[in-house]
Amino acid sequence: MGSLNSAVTFSDSCTPPLQLEIKRNKDHGHQRSKWLSMEKTITGLVEKLNLSNIQFIASEMLNQDLIWGRGLFCRAVMKSQVGSPHIYAALVAVINSEFPDVGLLLVKRVVLQFKEAYDCSNKKEMEAALKFLAHLVNQAVVYELVAFDVLLLLLGHPSSDHIELAVSFCIECGSSLLDFSPYRLNEVVKEFRRLIGDVEKRVQVLIVKLFVVRRQRFKEYPRMTDEFDFVEVEDQVTHEVSLLHEICSESSVDSFKAEKDQSFEHEMCSEIVIPCDDDDEVSSGGV
Image: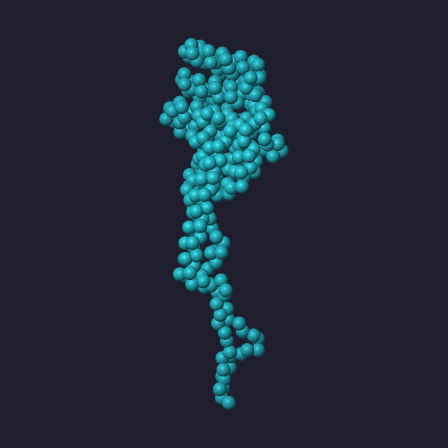
């Protein structure tokens, strides 16, 4: 009597659904623990930052998974930078030279913070965002284009608060604007001169101070001093962001989301292997 010679085997990657689900749950729990640990570390490092430990903090920060935790980094820095924006901008410049996506996200969020504060006429929030943005311009993390966007917006709607903010912002990053876009800076100064007769005495005094600082080529407000210069020019990564751009805050990266584990990407029991040699034939017949 004829016989049927065949074999049916499952591939090694075939895992029963229940075991696969258990593995997924274990991996999810492990990644959540890593995320919480990373959040604690990043927040702690950012809060410890000061003038004397910028390089050390940057080195420790680069040991973290900053692509996965970029939202945590940006949130911690933006919360802590108030009062010392120049120090935090120096840290961001170092991180940005290694992980440009992290630097770009932070710049976008600072610009969004300013825009939201502007729309709400929140002077305190606008001031905090603009001080930080000025130092990010000085650190060459973002091009000066966004600085001129800010100045034109504020001077285009010239309330006392807006002009005061514009003067402070222009003084903070004026050295950078003078170095890289002197013609545009001259146009901004002309706009200040045009407005000086239409504002209260207090604001006039601020504008006059800007004129003096400009004539002195921002000597008392240098773009960057040696103590904050940690990134070589060839290693700098400078982003182009504008108030005219549509900007996404990518808020989803602030919360835990499990990274894909490639070991779980295969399809369950997706392969059935039926080996069959050329001379193994299916036959039937009597003996």
